Amino acid sequence: MIKKILIANRGEIAVRIIRACREMGIETVAVYSEADKEALHTKLADEAVCIGPAPSKDSYLSMDRIISATIITGADAIHPGFGFLSENSKFAKLCEDCGITFIGPDSDVISRLGNKQEARNTMTAAGVPVIPGSTEAIYDVETGAKTAAEIGYPVIVKAALGGGGKGMRVADTPEEFENAFQTAQKETEMAFGDNTMYIEHFVENPRHIEFQILADKYGNVIHLGERDCSIQRNHQKMIEESPSIALNSKLREKMGYAAVTAAKAAGYENAGTIEFLLEKNGNFYFMEMNTRIQVEHPVTEWVTGIDLVKEQIRIASGEKLSYKQEDVHLSGHAIECRINAENPEKGFRPSPGTITDMYLPGGKGIRIDSAIYSGYTIPPYYDSMVAKLVVWAKNRKEAIRKMQSALGEIIIEGIDTNVDYQYEILHHPDYLKGNIDIGFIENMQVKAQ
Image (cartoon, rainbow, N blue to C red; front, side, top):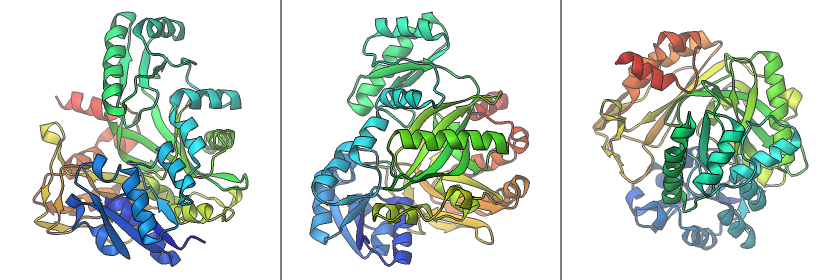
């Protein structure tokens, strides 16, 4: 069994992992940048080590410093959380070479699935539905235009090694393709230091449905149902819920089978997420696999009763899965709202600063995952998410009402947040009816104008 875990992350996910470790009797080591000296995760961990200046590249993305902190503190494992180095195959390989347990899949799997083109080819070979697209890496606009014509418009140009919505552009016609390709490729080079692109057919107005999977070292793979992540802005998720109102039991079984097949085809191990695009006619397509814990994992924990972080640690320790597929049952309905320090009225401009006063709601069926506190100064260097508000109720209608009430109670003063914006979404007629897709936010803003 793992005895001491270094958490190579910050904020609410670091706190979340620390709490799971406490309950399992595992010691924890927090790492922090100079900007995070007073961060909550440094106060809750058994040990805390400063790993450098505020910029991520000099601290949370510094592999050498994180490995050094692990060795110095005697930690035998690293949990990467999400973001930063969580899907970096080079970092996972470095852990393997140093005899440190990386709580996630091995480096080869991360590398294969991190390349969207290779991941697509793997899924196609396994019989998992994949959006029609290029089968080879594309580096120039001429080759791209030829491929786009073969696939059929509209198409979307994507970074092969990217994520987080960066390096993506849609072209509806051949005339739009050149500008879309060059813009996406330039953004890809700036964000990821790579110019490898791929092209696929653009599925219009789909839902974003993802399936949580767990896989151990012994070939056992299960799924824990789906999350509907269709409420998003610029490809960044904002509200997630489980289960999805768009799935019946037959479609859930079909998509769940595809998710398990995908994980097995990749030789996957630990917690992961298979992401699909779902059309209104029930057709679905593999989009990508995230090789880490997800921001939205609490909604799955609510409806299944399974602690995903604890399962990650047990799997990394060499244990068999604690559950079989027949043990997994979805109960009730859960919704998560990401609370960000940003100003929606000013183009969602980030709003770092000191929290002068705050009140977070509580009560039955309400969960807050956060690392903020009154007097805490949110630094300007990292992601703007400051809390996740998660609710559970016996059905979607009651869960929505509970979330509406909880959002109405939140007080976070000293900074701007998107709480009022989330409140508006939770009262929107189309959201209430479940008429949502990945263009919901954009359409809502257009109607408001």
